[in-house]
Amino acid sequence: MRRELQSRVQRRTRQSERGAVAVLVALALVALIGAVGLALDLGKLYVVKSELQNSADSCALAAARDLTGATINLSVSEASGITAGHLNYAFFQSSPVQLAVNNNVTFTDALTDPFLPKNSVTNPSTIKYVQCTTSLSNIANWFIQVLDMLPGVNVANASVSANAVATISPAQTTCAIPVFVCKAGTQVTPAIPNQSYTPGQWIASKAGSPPSYGNGNFGWAALNGTTNANDIRNELTSNYCNLPAIGSTVGSPGNKLTDDGAWNSRFGIYQNPYSQSSDATDFTGYAYTAHSWLAQANAYSDFVSKRATFTAYQGDGNGTTQSGLTLKGSSSGTVYTAGADRRLALAPEVDCGQLLVPGGHSANILQWDCVLMLDPMDKAGDPVHLEYEGNTTDPTMPCATHGIPGNSSSVGPLVPVLVQ
Image (cartoon, rainbow, N blue to C red; front, side):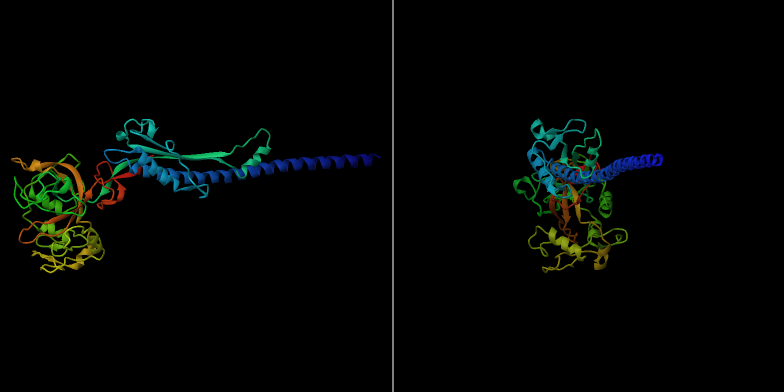
């Protein structure tokens, strides 16, 4: 009897222990699945966060691009941002990111001030920064919901957001050449229709001496502000990249350099004391003149193709394939593979009326232009030419190094850059 009773007690004890173990295993599985689920669900949210951040960055950069100009249309800026942001997909690239008008794109004039929707901005011309906010809500959890089985635990669906702030900043640029370009309408000869240059238009150097300077659209000016011809020569043979700011003064000694060797070195045409080893050439020395380019405009695209094949100066002579020039020095096609960006450059635009007054050997920089050096100087001292490619505020201008943001002293076209 006693043995039977002990056996029953032992069986009940074992059953009770098995039940307790089952409960512990169940609770451990819930915790384990919850931990694994937490890692997986957090990883999912991290992916969604990255996708939303890409959308916010795209939106801010696109919206900031339209903050340029004297008159800013915030509706255009907002629309550009929304369009760019909407092109990005979220939740494992399953659906486009949604942005709403007058909500997800906001503006401010300073990072210390609040960001406002466009309808709340009273003075759009002061706006310097744009912020884009993207979000995705009600994201269902995959595994972590198992924790709801625990007493007092209620796991809600997740929400993720991202934001980006962008502004516009001057881009890095090609370097400058020591010339002054007359602002259209300020002693420009011949007169420029509509008081402005057209991209692709050829402009000639001035043919006279100060103070009249004579016909032509550009002359020589030391970018360091002096009136020393040696400074101009040095700035032509070197890379002058520390550009003076708008409003600074450039100085002019006269209409033309007496030493054509500095100018011609950029075409790979050398005469003593200039040489390839000390004075770099451009990737091409091909000259554009009335003989070699009958259109006398829009040579830039051909210049790019000539650069790609390291095309050398085509020689003197008067045929359509020749330059029509008579040059001093020599040129070799072998030097161009060791070339640099030497003919597509920046040039300061000034009010040439400042140069016509007695003693007028300096002028203030009004803006920076992108120009292409077209032809070397010949023995006859005829004018040389530049092709106007655009103003530095024009985003299509080829002088900037692909729109890469520069520092505060850069003078290239304004390009969007993320700041937060």
